[in-house]
Image 1 (cartoon, rainbow, N blue to C red):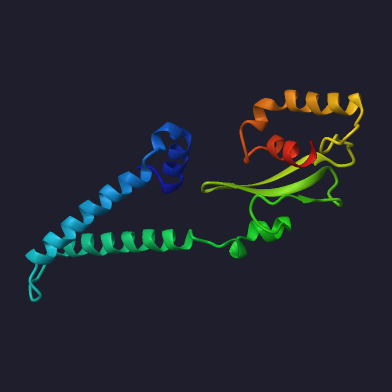
Image 2 (image 1 turned 135 degrees about the vertical axis):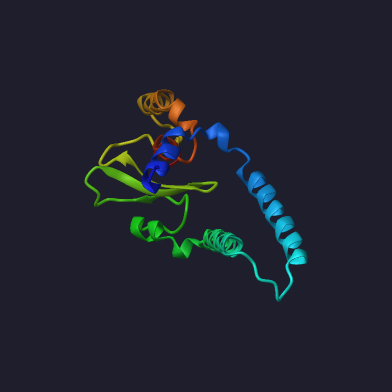
Length: 173
């Protein structure tokens, strides 16, 4: 028999993102089935009826599992004020980059959020001169530097908010 740790590792290895497209719909279907079963059992069981221990145990477990899942979903609505990653990074909110002049190698940090994914990203080389925003009358060399950066990192920039290249392009180039 597999341990809980082995099961988790097995699930993590086999996770295919295409498999997990309709988790909400699937969960709602399962909850509907649970509600239907609960309603039926409420009508079948009399208040003074003695139930076998295994039936009582199954009802207790189902109740506990549903309560635990509900508590988790309620806590998932964590506000930005409560997310410790924001405080640790020293940023004002999700997707709000900040300079980090005292960091030894990276010039910026952001706590990126896209959907329910959250990731702390450090980007930009400390002390590197970048082209910045296009300026009127800027040199051809700076224009070429910007164009080169964007071409070199186009694939990663296209990945969006969860990519350091996206934030470097947005903030520094």
